[in-house]
Image 1 (spheres, rainbow, N blue to C red):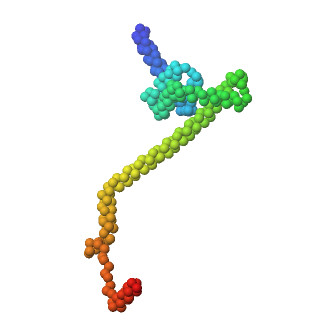
Image 2 (cartoon, helix red, strand yellow; image 1 turned 135 degrees about the vertical axis):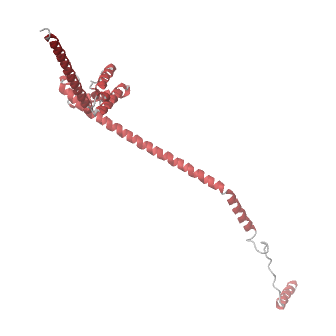
Image 3 (cartoon, one colour; image 1 turned 180 degrees about the vertical axis):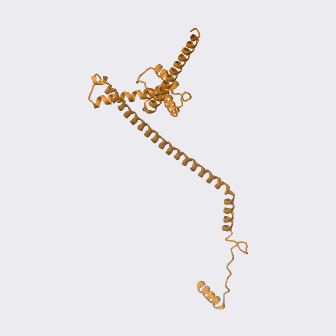
Length: 247
């Protein structure tokens, strides 16, 4: 009977080991399920709402943002899971944390969420003290309205960016045209200067030819007109005319 004691002890040790292995396996499966569920939740969250991506309520303190991000980033880190969607989910989580840590971006997001709340109240002709605002139904409708407002804000932002890019494009085109015009003027001045001597020589040749009457064998001198010999009749006529004048 004494010989059976060690055998029972070994069995107990093995049973304990098996139980621990089973617990470890279950914990691993649970962790995997939690990781996969969190990855799926992040990817399905409305990405324009950083609070939704981090699964936080609007207006939480900065410390909650940091703590939540640290826990979730460790849970879904691509190095700790084989889920192929982990990198995408991790990037979205990181982006959401960065946006909420940026004061200006968080202020704009908070303003959009507040606008959605006021729009919902006006549409239903409620007041800020209406009991409907404390119901789960209102919270759900608020999230939907927030999505609508954020989408409108994003469309407006993109239109502004597009208009700005178009204006910048027009300005760039104008500057390029001015640069081209300056290049043309500079090239024209260079060409004009390069032909200066040629133009001077051409003018000198023109002036020389003009002053010489077009040139010729007589060196450009004007020829004298030859007198036509006077015949007897012409001479007698001239003499008669002279005598008449004296009389």
